[in-house]
View (cartoon, rainbow, N blue to C red):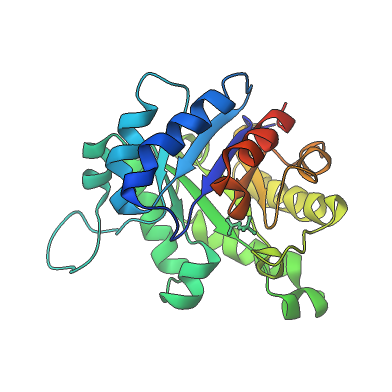
Length: 250
Ligand code: PGA
């Protein structure tokens, strides 16, 4: 299965002035981790985050990017700008961006292509709403999201993508999907990737679970065959909690 990756998604939290010390804290608290450790921070925190991560095992990610190279896109940030700072990862298509900032499957696909063409590693989010789950269409819905996200992406590029399965009803709610629910969808995602590419390619792709993952439920979720990591919101804001999740990823 894919390489274990635990990524923190700070969302709109922490100040630039708090970032350096916090990333240093994460680096020392996760020094023994056997997974890839990533902190995805607000744009304005990235320079300090990169500076703090320098010479450590911690990788830094952004929470979004624009799909164009440059130009009249007020308020947006390009892949080249992120690379110029030393950023390695970028979250694409988080459900909050889809809901509040009109992100669509089409813009998600454009952003993944742009990130890959520049050498940034995308963490691509998918996930169903509570009503979709209750209607029994979770796997169908996620299958469409994955197919649209990966449209026109070669197998060689697909291997560099991380998929984060984040049921929307579990994000920031304290309601975690059970390990069985999470595994069922992560296995379905692996199945779609097998259909799109091959078993070999699908197995190289990291599939994360995200949604109220914390220090106490991480080990069970991460013990599942198709869950290769986590995208962590709330619990990534405390270095001890985040480190506990990282040590559960073996
Ligand atoms: P949460 O957020 O861990 O706070 O539920 C996860 C995410 O949205 O990536």
